[in-house]
Length: 206
Ligand code: IMP
Image (cartoon, rainbow, N blue to C red):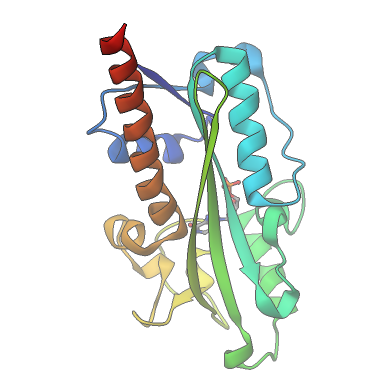
């Protein structure tokens, strides 16, 4: 069975390929369907954006599709940058500028008020158009300055309190175990397994 990942992001594709390797699926990406083009992410929530992408691609390809959307929510900023995480400091989606803007917005804010979470929503739409959704959350604190050199995006300023480290100080394996994306992906694997099982049973009963 083909599984289309509604992304062209190479990092995400590699991450999903690792996670889904035990499943009998052939991974396709938007690069295999260039006629689909850019999908505008205009939802108010991560879940809405993930579902919008998954539905659009499932309808266009007729295949089982998975889409995700993620970002950072800072409590002191009433959930900002939220769905605007990638373009918080402008449309050019610059990670360093985004971090600078966030550190400035939290300048002088006490540690106990710097709580935040990363959220990842995943939507899966099967060949019949049935949608399944899951979400992963990772809570932490926004640091006063960058620490660590790994990862991407806001990783250098996101502290995991129980590890006393930022995401940028963790290995990919350590981060995947606790991250919003890792947790959402674990659920997604279970959903896809049960869809495949359902389809196999249907084929046997024919
Ligand atoms: P998207 O899921 O690719 O749309 O990600 C949106 C944005 O959220 C990214 O460009 C990052 O700025 C931020 N983001 C999402 N997940 C992470 C993460 O694991 N670490 C750091 N930043 C993240």
